[in-house]
Amino acid sequence: MDQLKSMRLFCAVVEKGSLAAAAEVLEMSTPMATKYLNALETRLGTRLIQRTSRQRRLTPSGENYYLQCKQALGLIDQAEADLIESTELPRGKLKVSAPTWLIHPGFGGLVAAYRQQCPDVTLDLRLDEKLVDLVAEGFDIALRATQQPAPQLVARPLCTVHFAAVASPKSLAMHPVGTPEDLLQAPAVAPAEVDLSSMWLMHKDGQQRPLHVSAGLLTDSAAMAKWCAMADAGTAFLPLSMVAEELEDGRLQRVLPDWQIRPVTLFAVYTSRRQMSPRLRCFIDLLVERLPELPGFTRQ
Image 1 (cartoon, rainbow, N blue to C red):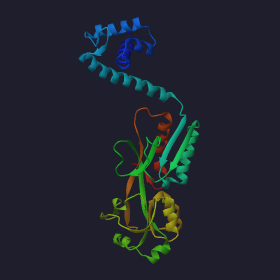
Image 2 (cartoon, one colour; image 1 turned 45 degrees about the vertical axis):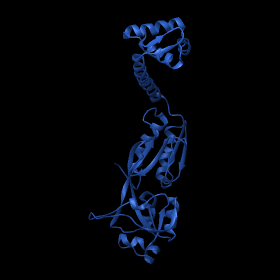
Image 3 (spheres, rainbow, N blue to C red; image 1 turned 30 degrees about the vertical axis):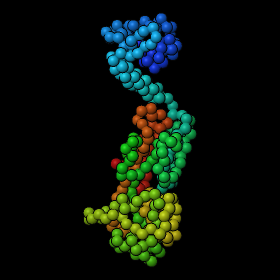
Image 4 (cartoon, one colour; image 1 turned 90 degrees about the vertical axis):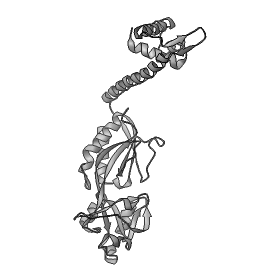
């Protein structure tokens, strides 16, 4: 008799509590279900379920076999689901969390390219600096720049993000910054959700210093930090991708040009490698391909 069907029947008997209920779930007659269970025990050479007129209970061998059956059947079902999904076209809704500093023409082009590749997917893109709870808030994926991604999530590195300390020419003229220590005396526009002391400064000759500032202005918006820096509010610490154009045309200048903020890795984080939908797989593949080509990003 079919071994897989026998295993499924055995598990159903355990879970439903009776042979008749298990037979109904598997759409077979009770006599046929009895034949499958008897054949399974005969093949294994041991009693799995102790049957009396009043109750059925697992034998010690049955308890061990049930756990192994559940695991084996789960792997088989998952393999089939993955194969089916891999041949499906991406469709449905993809909910993405990303930081506001990805508001950039290059990232906009990447999103447009995804829409062209996956026209049947509704892309729900939420831009925020907070760390969302993927499960509780229904997100499929989050993009996070960090040194240490959350251990309970799958984290796939996408690219390296480079940062710059920038200020307007007028701000630097009023508050010159020649050493890392001078940052404590100069006005700063700091991120409200990030501890800047974890972002070390590295000199071109190998020296390193923790990044300490005296922030008179805190904001959870990288875009607001950029505009405030351009309005002479002080030094801001931003991804290079956000300020490349302003540095080129002189509206902003690098602070401490001989020092570099230690770059961080941008990760795609999601809950599980299993049951990855085609729409999510397509989005991650595009991120891996296109993000490192944008200004301010480099490949791992």
